[in-house]
Image 1 (cartoon, helix red, strand yellow):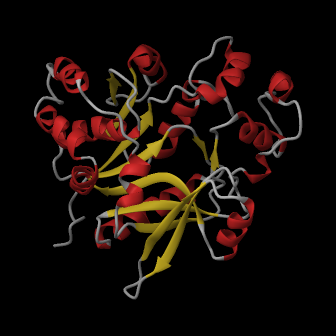
Image 2 (image 1 turned 45 degrees about the vertical axis):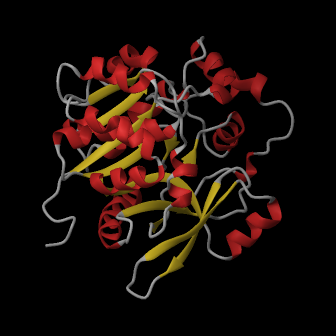
Length: 319
């Protein structure tokens, strides 16, 4: 039996970022500097709600864990009240995406040790959802065949973006594509080389067995992963909050991309094509995106203070 057979697919939604780069934008739009995932930037739905809408047809709310910052748990629950059964988990401190992935992963493994897991950032926008769903399905298969048991979605690039991370893929003889290396925010000449060579933009959407995520973290983030080990036994109980506080008391910060992905070997890469993927990470990217659309929500006129000077977001992701 293949590793992925008869396993349920779970979702982890990363919504714990503080969004400091977007503070001016969110303040203008809603009157206070909320993290961008809680703000309706591109429609009447917040980015967090849009994320849940996208994944809901493949992964139900009762198999979805959303991690948020402790001070925004009430707001998150309010915005997600229509998604019955979703598990909202508040992290006691922002220690980077390493613990940010391990915390919700612990909740998944506590309820389903054999789970397949798809990880989604909550600050993305997709014009076309069906290509994303197809790529997730492909990633499940690719992860099952990849040596590391993990697959990343890479958006097909159409310009030499200097403000995004790139995946350099290499085809393998057995039909899957592996990650050769990562390149973070390259200079323009390097970005042009990557574009010409078929490089992909790293969406940070990842799929793999929960145990594969855990094993990679144990290899590259051993101290943090061992700290969460006992927590898995309590994550699905009423004692989870108290145990979570103990875990975070002495927990060290870590970045999942730099510490785990960039040091791992045998990761699969799955191209994401025609999805209209867009990273809403900076005001420049958001403004450039709105300029290319009809801006039905009327956001552009309200963003005058962040639109001064020439936009550099011509390099933003709009695949």
